[in-house]
Length: 386
Ligand code: GLA
Image 1 (cartoon, rainbow, N blue to C red):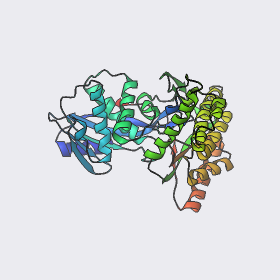
Image 2: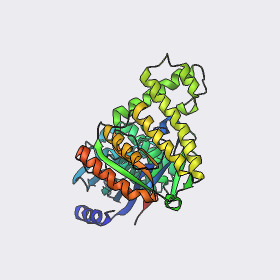
Image 3: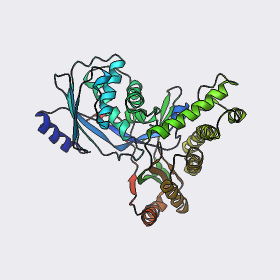
Image 4: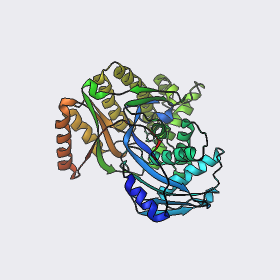
């Protein structure tokens, strides 16, 4: 991470030095669009993320500089009316406002410069990394005493209330709680989680992301529409089974019972969400036994579900997934919210080089785009650097 460049810019702009904090992006092995359906997810933090240098400035303004965009923004934080115009600055503003809503007293503004190496729009949660960096930093610098899970909720609420994406908790949770060498199996309904040791190399596998480098739609509204579909299906099921709070709680037969009461679209979205809850359970159980092949088959099934039922894949990601299958990749699927971004792949070590070379060549031939390969290194979560 480019801490040197951040420090130089900070000194140039503000004539001093501040404290540095970092938060990572994430991968997710399986369990996609399950978080807001009350299901499980299996993310891990990665070695790419956001870094911010921060120093309180004795004024009522936050002065922020986005190094990668060479853009600055200055805004107050006393009320929502102070919201900045710049999209990226809304994340910082939202975090401060959400901390204040939870009782934090933030009596002065700060100066900050940030930069990141999580690829934007790749489905690796660059925005959660940004939110987590500032939530974690404020908690630490001001001694606010919030639990880590509450800091994750601060980031999630920022998305809901200041960005307009009704996301689940997975990304912010993973960015804050990440641990090197471990995935996290999170029950998104209860908030309980466990660290699961993840050492694919010890089992003869490698994990990589293939970034399609395409982004087809604005993530916000299509994402929110899928969530609403699942919520409508739950509302219909609740008439017969009032105990059902999320799709995770429903039996598939219960969904089938209300097929005439909801639209076909809501039905297939909810069906995917419920099936994905089971797939995660099966994949986790298999991986605990070192059975990556079974877990990999579930990943392919998830891809089909995300492509055909949830409709969050795209032609390019389907193509990458197909090339993976042809190359004998163990598990492959579109990762994250979808609508472009990355495929995550678990590959037998002896098939890895051929897969990488083949997907790069075929993707370029078909779409004229160089896809990017990111080997996955599972790393620590939010932290103070210096
Ligand atoms: C985005 C959201 C997450 C989650 C994933 C899909 O990354 O921010 O909460 O819903 O999509 O699993």
